[in-house]
Amino acid sequence: MTISHINIHHFRNIDYAELSLSPHFNFIVGNNGSGKTSLLEALYMLGHGRAFRHAQSNRIIQHEKPELVLFSQIRSVNQQTRTIGLSKSKTGDNRIKIDGDEGFRLTDLAKLLPMQLITPEGFELLTGGPKHRRAFIDWGCFHHYPEFITLWNSLRRLLKQRNSLLKQTTCYQQLLPWDRELVPIATKISAFRADYASHIFPEIVATCADFLPEYQLSCYFDRGWDEDTDYADQLIKQYDRDKFINYTQQGPHKADIKLRAYNIPVEDLLSRGQLKLLMCALRLSQGEYYAKQMGQSCIYLLDDFASELDQTKRDLLAKRLKLANSQVFITAINEEQISQLVDENDKIFNIKSGIID
Image (cartoon, rainbow, N blue to C red; front, top):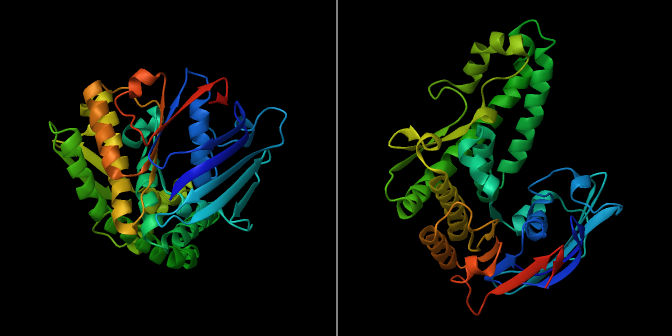
């Protein structure tokens, strides 16, 4: 899918905007604080139902406005046109319309508009806690295994109940009914993640060889508990420790991806520019693998394209994005940063104080 048209109402400092978009590259140019990242966030919200900088509605809806509204037309690979409408109130309520019909969920948006986001804050994927890397692998599982989202929601519910019950139990047998339900779900989720990892890791290593040929990258999936232990046995084994802190310490909610170069954690070895390239390699690899498997491309959103990258690395990233044949949105401070990227199929939008032309 590509976004062919978008209307924006009351989103951050953009009071109103109506844009016709290129199915190829779209460049958003403006000074810091002009609203270029807000436009990128509005596009992101179409595929996620939330902004990427702030989850709170009152931080993204214009002051004294009751809600924000986004409307878009999207186009499939066979040129079928569909419409998406999304409104969010200051109480956090979402209303979603697809082709004029209501009753849809945020997951329906995510299925329609798969997106890869690259921002200056995206270093957390490599340097932050495991939750960021779990989100990365779960994005792939969500799109490639239809059963995954239902299992993941069940896992969250059961873990919340189990942690609450840990405060009340006096022996493990009192937890057994919940663990009998939890174990097969945890095992299936871990199996999906491991299977996805086995396919995406070679893609990441190959892309890294292109972006960072001076390093030999290795990737490992850590499922969140001992590899040689059945999860049912692990829950019994750790009951006393879980009881002590009233929290389930091991399981798929603790899964992680280990990224190393020459057996050294990448965050301890690579410079910031190299980390940005590696982050881009992960996002591109995931988007390209999705495109190969699903027969449609991802949408790529890049905020502050030039940050941390010299001209050679920018050219390398741009070339790979061009080859992906995807719709791409890039923010930049001035047109000089993007001059070598623009061709006749692309569009440039200039933004100043929330006004776009």
